[in-house]
Length: 349
Image (cartoon, one colour):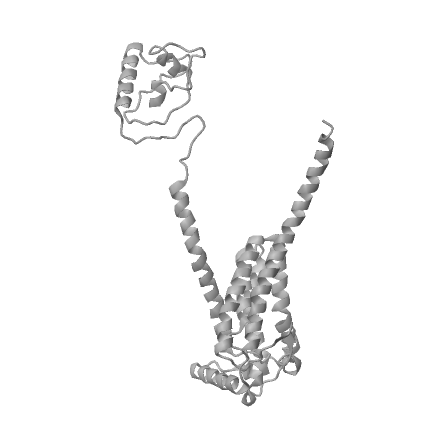
């Protein structure tokens, strides 16, 4: 009795500590996941920087491909949007890492399921994009001399020769454009999870605006943007294919092992639908009792319906009417009905 007040004060403190520990564990696990995968991606990308000659040669091959299909108009796009270079350069920087981090933080706080979906898609798609960066280094349009495109963002001055956490930036990672790929993933997940029309409109507009931005700032070709979108869609397909099989397996196991639905007062059937010898004997006894006693009725209630010819082990709890009929076949118990041994009539109901 003396320890009760102390115990009552201790339990709320333990619950509060557990509530604080859950977000801490989640944040720690997510930071470890991002640090292991994304920093590993940057390390591989920085360690496999291709040579300038190879990267420019690959860029010229892409320009030839664009000319063959009629979409090689990067220089024209940059010239026509000269009045918006500053705004597009700011959007190129703020619409990628800051926007994605903000969306991830918001969804991690308010929509944990959406966060996990988006995080998985981002990490899978960037892993797929790494294949292109390693095996097909490509110089961006601003580094191809004959194109004459300006570097409106100013990446050529410090970014191309800089590093992050000791990892060198790769200036020849134009193919595919993950500015477009990740923007597309954010737009798809945001559109699917949004409840407001404005958020859905912005989710649709963001990938399109980013596609124009990366071209007008001289950082990507149109074919880079197309490849980035395809990588994003490939990431969705990979995640769907990997998670689909466990879901189907769980659904199969659940369908095979789930208990039969029950209602209060009814017991599930435990035998086959075919009547056994004991069941047939019990049915005959109840038929004889009914023929002697006639339909059992109570004041204000209609006569009981005849027993169905289909046998079922599903039984209802003892009722006064079944107890009266069954009491003629065996001695009455103290309560008038034995719940341990089901009456013959109740087994037929």
